Image (cartoon, rainbow, N blue to C red; front, side, top):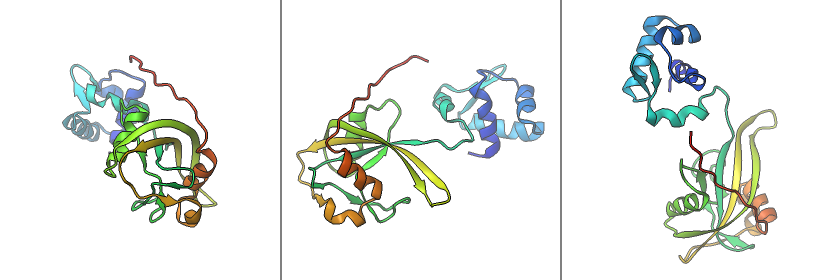
Length: 201
């Protein structure tokens, strides 16, 4: 999304509806330029216009994330195996490209932790059943001078009846993402609870 469009949308964090001239005053850009970007947002189905402009129903999910600040990304990490061996795969993406990793990924809207566990493991053609939440860890990734990424790692255990190849954990320490290795060694025997709350906006 373009920077100006992001700025336009940020105004709807604090306003349900805005007139054209109100948006113009808030973000301080020329009216012809503003008109162009508002038209784009309407085409994309993000904004709608009645007498005033507002977010479309399908774009309401953007609201908590409209910010120029980079946010911590919640990620689920899944252990299948035992304390000595588990299912690991070689990452193709950065960060940690070519390292062994536990399967993991982001949550989707409306998804529970057991549902996310099942969906993520299906990418590896593994039918998994959620067992428990082991731990939550905050990870900062970067160089010694700067932090590039931050992840909230929700570490869970699952089981499967599929025949899968397990990897020795301690023997492959240098090949495993260091945070994954630490979590596997230190948090596997723990168990915590996270409640799911359904709210009306």
